[in-house]
Every structure is written in C-alpha cells, then in structure tokens.
Length: 493
Image 1 (cartoon, rainbow, N blue to C red):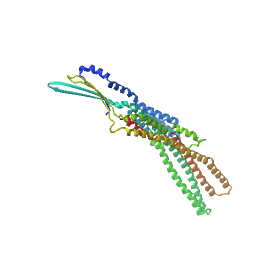
Image 2 (cartoon, one colour):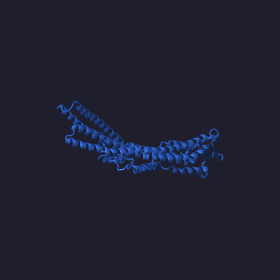
Image 3 (tube, one colour):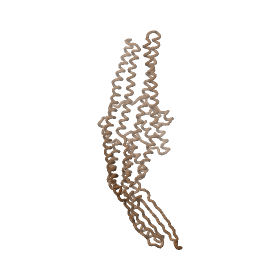
C-alpha cells in the first residue's frame, strides 16, 4: 500500500521532546494539510439536495410541474391529499404529469436512487481515513525490565497527491447524476402524458362505438321487420345483421382498449385502489393547437438543452483533463515515505526516514497511456456521433409530429365536415323520399369510419407532441462508467 508512516516511540521523560517533533516534522505538516483538504470533498447531504434542486427547477421550466420528494410522513400525507383533490374532477394531461412527479412511488424510488449515487460520488472524493496503531512490548533481560512503546500514524501519500483528480471525478459523477436524474424525471412525465392521451382517446372511441352499436342494432331490427312483411330481401337483411355483428366486435375491442389504457395510466401515476376507482377522465382530447411548433426553433432548442448532449460534453472534458494525470501516473504509480522516531529503555532515540518508489522495469506505463488515449478518442467520437443522432432524432420526431398535426387538422377541417355535409344532404333526400332508410344507413357507416379515424389522428398528434418534447430534452448516454474507470485507474494507484 502507498502510505506514509510516522512512527514515534517515547518514554514519559521524552514527552515534551516528542511533542515538539510531532509538530515540526514534514510528515505531520502533511497530515495536517490532508485533514484540511477533507473539506473540499463536500457534504453528501448538500450534494444530494443540490442535485434534487436542479432537477426540480428543470421540471418547473420544461415540464410545467414540480418534482416533490416525499421524505417524511407529513409530506406523504399532504401528497395524498393533493392527489385526491386532483382526482375529484376529470383529470387533465397536466394534472396527470403533476401526480406522476409528486406522488408516484416509482419516481420516489428514482429520487432515492439518485441520492445513493450522489452520496457515493461524495464519498469517492474523500481521502481514506488515517490509521493509528499502538504497540507495547515488555521484555526482561537479566532481571531488568525494559518497556518499548511504538505509535504509528499512517495515511496514503499518493491519495493526497491525487486528491484534485478525485475531486474532478466526483464533480463529474455529481453532474452525471444530476443529468441522469433529470432524464428519468422527463421520461416519467412523458410516459404519464402519453398514458393519459391513450386513456382519453380510448374512452372517446368507446363512447362513439357505443353509439355506433345502438345505430347498428336499430338497423338490424328494422331489416328484420321489413323482411318479415316482404319489403326486404334475405341478402339485404344479412348485410344489416353483419353490420350489427361487426359493431359488437368493435365495441368489445374498444372496451378492452379502454380498460387496458386506463390501467396503464393508473400504473404511471402510482395510484392506489381507492384513487384508481376515483379516477375520472375528460370526454375528449384537447383541441389541436392553432399553429404547430416551428422546426427551426425546435432544432435550436434541442441542441442547446438536450441532456445527452450536455452529458457527452462533460464526459469529453473530464476525459481530456485526465490525460495529463495519466501520463504522470503511468511512470510513477506508487510512492511511500516514512519518518521514524523510536526509543527504547536505556538506548538513545533513533531517528530516520525511508523512501520507496517502484522501478518501471516490467511495466513501463505504455499500456496505461495507450488506454488513456483510446478512452479519449472513444469519448470524442461518441460525442460526435451523439450530435449526429440528436439532430437526426429531432428531425425524425418533428416529422412525425408535423405529419400527425396535418393529418388531424385534415380530418377535422376536411374529411369529417364533408362526411357531415353528405349525411345532412342524405337526410334531406330521405325526407323527400328520394332514398330509402337503408341507403341512409349505408352512408352513416362511411361517416362512422371517418369519425373513428379522426379520433385516432387526434390521439396520434398528442402522442407525437409528447414524444417530441421528450426528444428535445434528450437522455444522457451511458458514458459515466467509462469515465469513472479511466479516472479511478489514475487516482487509485
């Protein structure tokens, strides 16, 4: 072990002299300096709170909802009351995000896991505790009893010299922890919003297919009665009955989709059984925005604010700064210095020092330097590729967003109004006895398909909107382990 050993052995008569020696040796001054630098490692609770505050601020600015960390029973009770108040009315998409960020047990677990990582990073920046050893030997030679006392205080010199590197590594780990936690919060918010969109759209489709089934049942009953009096053929009645049978199947599928999407939303929000039973959803999805987001503004926001881009830059900077340290430690990866004072009964005190440095005979450090260079180039190219991926992902998701917007707007402004106009005209023709009831019902089937497609198009837009917002914030790449390995290999020699 790379260590500095300070040995002092003294009899009671030499206590004052030993005291002066203890405060004047270079090793003692070095020990005092090491103790003073412990403050630089920071406080674990402070780092945890800073990371949470950063994530909380990001959620306010980008998500419009506040992350809450429930650390006490009072906090949990208040959170449950807040959730019950939100569930007392039909739940909006924004309220769904608020619940997921303030109450969900899954998100609370993320916050505590982030605290674990932050505390570990803080601990890694601290010097190992010094070790104190005491030895008392008594021997009897020729009837004379001799006492020998040895006191040893040891700590790592190399760890002290590499303390700046440890602090840089800890700072990087804290930054990575903040960005990862922020990314997990953004992902949780996006999942909650998408689950809400699917649940509302499924419920809206269910309500519409219930109306379709009622119409189909009426059509099938009318066809049966008209066939009974000879005004309708068997083929015509079979067509109406097939339409009614299809309506039953569509309704069953819509009901199952509604139940499934509702349960997905309940899981995303972390609701208990009583809260799940109280959950109410609005009858329909929100209207489309007047104008879609501008592509140029979206791309600029993505490159400025994406968490994975920020993480890649931090990783590259950290690896670059570690290059110089690696060049040094590849040659000298061990240093042991000792200052010794020893006294025995009847003998003059002995003083001295020792110095040991590993000789680079078998390991010249070339492999370490090559690994450090390869690590840097890997980080450099990964950052470059991430920039390409970020731009591509934003363009892809914006294309899906804009297509979904245009389709939903097209159904709203063109297809559904045209089908409604056709239906109104056919009712006028039916009232003028120009067409029969079954021609009117046949046209209604086409209107049913257009309305169902319009609901799906509106749902797809809001899903694409949530996906685009998540893409703009990004997700940090898994590069922290690489940087930690590179840094620890230098700092742990």
